[in-house]
Every structure is written in structure tokens, then in C-alpha cells.
Length: 442
Image (cartoon, rainbow, N blue to C red; front, side, top):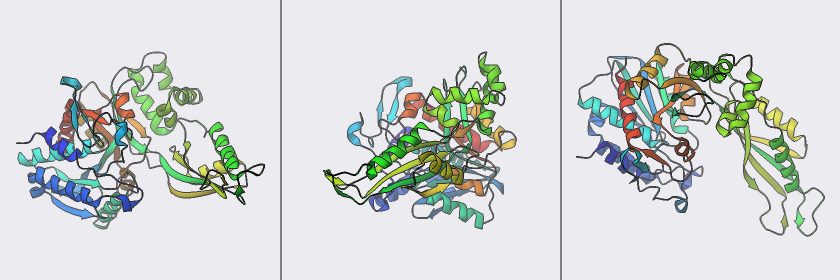
């Protein structure tokens, strides 16, 4: 009989890679993944209704004693591409490296996000086998293109909306159990995303007549573009403490050492100073206190000795709670200050609404953390730095949270979307216990 770990390894070995260019997606890998889910979790597939939506997104419904205010557990099947030679182990080999508490599964998707998906399936399979009936309906929503467009999750939301279903609690990937992230706080914290930043992509475009590179103009398109990017880098978006971050600081304040305990408790009064400190501490804390903008793609001439008729740069912008797409676009124009640079907003999503960090649903999450992980862990509201499929569900639920129930070190978090992604075996197994506890708490 297969163990939970063996089932996890099997699903990690299926390369469900998503690409922005959908012609590159191997659809057969997703078909194989679905077939393996059905084979590995037969009780779940007998007890839960299953629908396939928008291609390869799947939605399961587990009938409970009541259909009102259901629980939605989210995860995504797709993973980002890999560069195999950068990895110490086969990225789709799901090898176990190390022993004892250090034993870890190395694979693309181990954390992002098959770790959560398989842990959810393990929890449901076990509870179904025990004859458990949830107090309210439980939905499992597993998107297939979270890493690109998120169309699968959007289609699920439209389907649920059309059926008049308004979830009482939605949980997707997000913050983890961490330590040493916040200065002066030694306790482990469960970072529960109550909101996520908005996301927009702006293309900066410069044009010129072109010609031979041996006779360049005084300010070629590439130089004009480089100047615009330099101005943007030198004048970042302003810092401030948003409501979710202020709530996070107030929550951890009792567990912080002095003088930071007092500082965190008075974050409103000392906001400018505190945001300046956070901005200098590192990329994660800097992203908590400002809208960020970074050039990610550059395009110029088609040859080494040819002047670029068009020079373009893609700028990835993540909007802090309270900022807007329109405001960010205007700031780009003001900072770049060059009419020769055209700004094209290709895609944009405003920051999400903020879910409450008090009340019944928050207590349900906190209770599951205490029961399954550790009572010593401090659940705290958190501003999710990246985008997730959960953003679509804010249209049909007021309680949308982003939390992955795994204790992750800094190096493990740094491996997300990079090489050597991995998760410790005992950490992953405790995640199953978390989902069991959440499902069984009414």
C-alpha cells in the first residue's frame, strides 16, 4: 500500500508546466495528473462530485450537512518551467535527500503548489475513509494556469456565482510559518495573507529611425530607454505602512523585544521611520511597505550592428494596498519625464480587498494552526506580496485568506520559482494535519 509520501512523489514527477505561450503547454501532462489523482485517491473520487472547467482546472464538491457558507480549499496543479542544469537533483525526480528531520523532497512544485494540493487530497481521503461528514459543503478548487493567466480560477468563480454560492471561507497558498522575518520577534509566526498586492505590467517603448550602428544618433532609443529605467530605479514608489502591515505589527508586538515592542504597538505614529527601516532590511520587508517596480524584459535591435528602431522594457509593478493602477501609471510618467517614452499598460489588477483578521473565520484558521502545528505559533495578518488565484474569489467571499501550512526556512522560501525547490518531509506531513483540522472545525 502506498504511503502519503509515495503518492506525493508520484504527483511531483508529472511535469505540469505552464507557459505564457500556451502552445508550449504539454496538455497530456495535466491529463496524466488528473488520472493519477483518481487512481491515488479513490475514496475522494467516489464521495465528491468532480467537474473539469476551462480546460484542466478541476472543482470538487464534498456535500456537508449544510450548503450555506461552504469552505473552499484552493491549490494549483501547474508549476513554473525549470532549467535542469541549475538543479542539484532532477527537478521532476522527487528525490528524498537527507535523513531524519532534514529529509526533504526535491522537486519543482514541492512547495509551489503541489505540496498544498496533495496535502489537501490526503486530508480529504482520510476523512472520507473515516465516514466523516463536514458541517458545511467543502469545495476543492485546483487551477491549471495560476502561474500565467489564472483563467481557470476565474472560471470557477463565475460558475459558483451563477449557482448562487457564496463561500464562508476561502483558503489559498500564501504566507507560511516562519521565524526571524520580523526584527525583534523570536516566536514562530503563521503569516496569513488577508490581502494581496495588485499587479500590473507596463511596457516602456522608445522609437527611432534606425540605421547602421556605426553612425548612432546622440540619444538612440536604447539609451533613452536605459535613462527611463535608471530614473525609475532611483525614484522608487513612496513608503508607507498599510492597514494589513499595521495589523501584523500590532499582533506580533506582545512577542517582540523592547524597544521594538513599543515601536510596533505605535506603528501609526512612527510609520515613516518604521517603513524606512523595513525598506532597508531586505527585499521581503521592502515589498511590505511600498509599491515595487522592476524591469524584467528588454528588447532592442535584431542584430549586433543594427540600431534599434524600437527599444522596449517590460516593468513588473506590484501595487501596495491603497495604491491604484491609474495612480501608478501617472507616477511612471512623472518619474520618467520623457515624452519620447510611451507607456503601455498591458495587464492590470487592482490590490485585493482586505479580509478581516478577527471573527469566526479567523478563529477557525488560528484554531487549526494551534491544533495541527503548534500552540506556540502566533497567527498574524499579513500582506501577500505576490498574486494568487485567490484574488478572483474576493468577488464572492468576504473571507479570503492566503496561507500555506508549512514551516519554511529562508533558503526554502528563496527556492520558490528558482532551482532546488524542496520541502522537508515532516513539515509536509504536518500540513496534512492542518487541513484535517480546518475541515473538521465547524
